[in-house]
Image 1 (cartoon, rainbow, N blue to C red):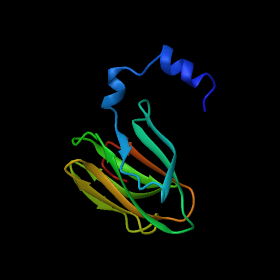
Image 2: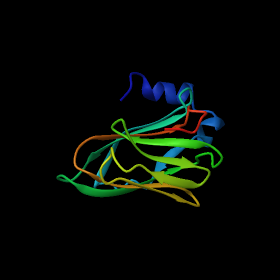
Image 3: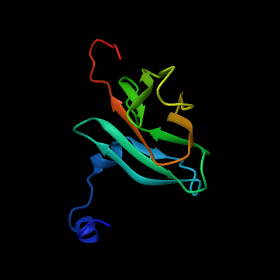
Length: 133
């Protein structure tokens, strides 16, 4: 818990804008446990850390909701890029993140992967105006 977390929630509640931000959904608890999920508005990135709730190598699937469908996003796992989301389509990287799969759905992005240990995923707006990654 954060220091004075309950007090801050009561005295400084989130504004309406907070509920428009991208967020993670459909994490298969107890197979996976979320230890961090935060939208960093300055970096335009959703940072998500998961740990397995069961012993090693469990398959997990989760969703990222409320992404801007007109933006381009880079998807990484532990710092290795494994996908680019651009205007509703997905390009999978051939190396770097093992057996992770990104798919675009009408309601957002679905990520399917194995989870053997703590993993950090980042879905960030591309900062490369040339479109090269």
